[in-house]
Image (cartoon, rainbow, N blue to C red; front, side):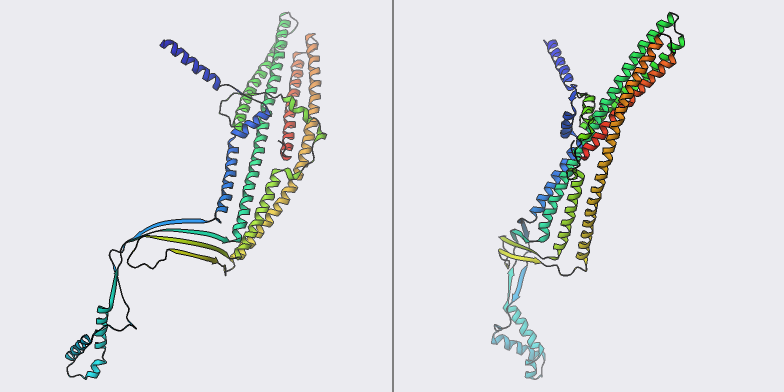
Length: 475
């Protein structure tokens, strides 16, 4: 029973392993969809949009009611606050106390004139001391604690409203940056997809060529054994086969590298098997018609949109610096609840007020910041015009590149047909002993070179169309 359980467990693990190695079967459209979900650079761009959205909400929140609360505790270490209410309410000294002070002064100054003693500072000092002793009051200060809640509200600030608009424009440029990243990823996915297909096509061409040469080599060997051909003919064809086999192995490694690059661009796990379902020639058919290219709508270009948004942000920065000259008005309300009271309390429970901040003089600081903002706005405006001109020139250049690539592809297609017919003709003559093996291998090399040039022209044509589609924002 335990043995059977172990077998079932092993089979389950094998099933999981096979499932884990299931290849990704992707068309170009499916590859784009997969990359939009898994590509790491796009995930980072989406986080930038989320960050900008939080910035907008944070900017708006600065002008909404702000509530702060505090709880404090204070001790005075049993200190007693002393004070008196002298001046205007009588001294509070009895006649007997005053007489005692006078008699004490007479004793201190025997023989002095009584009128002089009454006007002396000695009498005044003694009287004041007695007043302080008899008329003073003290309040013991006990520990105190309070809880405070304060509500603040921004009532008017020109910079606040402009700041909200600028933050929303910053979010918009982050969203446009995401669109631009999506275009970059789609371009890299298409380029990697094309490269894998082209490399695979090149590998198929080399394999067929090797098979043909192997058949010719075998035929030549039989001719040599029959005494019709020479050993050098067999050797030359064998060397050609060996060289092509080395190239085939290099191309296999190049194909593996193409798949690795495509996995990275897709955001797939390293080592994930990939199977491309689209055919290379299916992408070439729509490119053959050069006359169906649409007109360039520059407003659809993401880079142009981003420069326009940057110009709008710079304009808002100018408005923000202008509003720096205006006052700012805020209001507040505070409630202070006294949990523990001291013996001396002069703080009210409720407070409310308004605060107006008026900029008066900044030694030209605000003026210089405004001028700097104006300069940056002019730079943004000129940059938009520069980008517009560059995009128009780029579109013209890409159209010419596409036309050149298309003409080269058509020429290479004809060249392949010519080279193929020439190789077949030389091969037939070689079978009849009319040409040497050197002529045969040279004709084969020409045919293989024509096939290779054709495949390279395919890649150039697809890349030219891809660049133009990206410029048109049609990926």
